[in-house]
Length: 368
Image 1 (cartoon, rainbow, N blue to C red):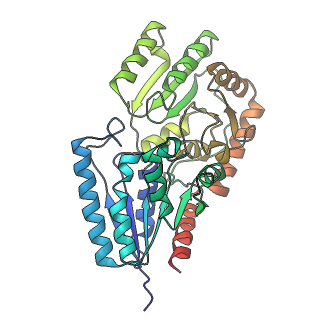
Image 2 (cartoon, rainbow, N blue to C red; image 1 turned 120 degrees about the vertical axis):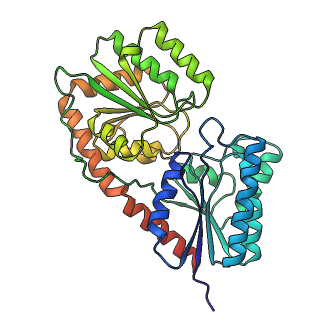
């Protein structure tokens, strides 16, 4: 008798990272499909400052994860098991028992990389050897862009499939092309993401200072949580040193409608991150017709086209970011063009319906 059931291990919010948000989309989509069994994992105590770190608390959380998921796999005896794959080495170890039980039950194991690379593949020694060995046991790995696929191929990982991310938009909000900032009103700039050096918070503050030096009338809206007290203290020292407090609004974490409202009222999305896969926040900005000025890292070049959806900066130079922001502000025709192209790109590639269907088709192919 052919086994039809597919088991999905989903890490849903909190914390509110891109992977967790996508997992919630999959949960909502698959929860009414009888041949799918869903296991959800979340942690109210986990945040960007402790996620992925080796601690007694995280060890306990991971042990509970292993026991819960292995028990479900053994009981359900599915045809396919889907899970996200940690990018760091020690969190990856919790996948090993899941992998072993999956293979013992005769199921296929598939997973996704929610980033530009597995960090242990950038090292040498036992972490590289063990991590690569674990990854080679997967029957298929979903990645976020062709550049990511090519990177994994160089490590002998050739069972990769490229599937775009997708996002769910709030209902009742108007998404239409923008004609440019309202004259005499502050230009509304926006950043969404973890507030850390890796996400470019120091570049963001340099941009604020240089736009202020140019005499631009603007407000910089920053959404997200601090990854460390050290980064936070250094950032506020910089803000105080250059008297930038009046130009910046820190919103903390905004969810769903509150975030959609801020996106709807913003003009330009600025994203100077150093480490990305295919960031949902860039897609969210495109969905609301915001021109994007972003660093060119990870799968961002697979996500947007330079000069069509906005501009990509290759060297994280704050002067280059400011130059492109000014070009967009000062050219209403360019602003409108970028805005219209982003709306079209979102509808063509990044809706939640497209994303969920593509994931389902991938899982179904693996179940044959």
